[in-house]
Length: 206
Image (cartoon, rainbow, N blue to C red):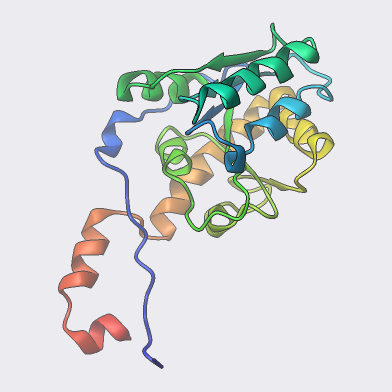
């Protein structure tokens, strides 16, 4: 309709719940466990890692069959000690705890229209986000090698990003802090949303 508009990025609820902690051994993926979220891609990446990095999948499977398929993929590749699958509803307290102590997070959906709340929760926890070139809206948030990694949607490419962060905790820490700064630069906060929504029409459209 030829109307200028400014995107308003929705912030998360009570961001103060998420705080930075240590940078451990785990890449954490927190979301619904379903095909388009591509947890399988991260599992396959673990076949190719060369470090002691681990992967934790947190969330309830969309169906018993899909949950069974995830468990089978882990077992078929001998990854039981390196891939943890928490197939259950995650509490807000557990989510904050996982993000506080993880090495980084991964968010790998197929062409999704949002950046995903887990990416913002990671930012408030000062953790980097690993994503892929075809993941959609999260690419508006992640800047490659600045506040995370953007890789090809291939297991080998993801494995390389996992290993880089495991070997270089200083880079993991710097990227995590940059992720928090990135959200500030994008004005992802309720103060900005309220200001824009209550502004007079010409100002809101400028």
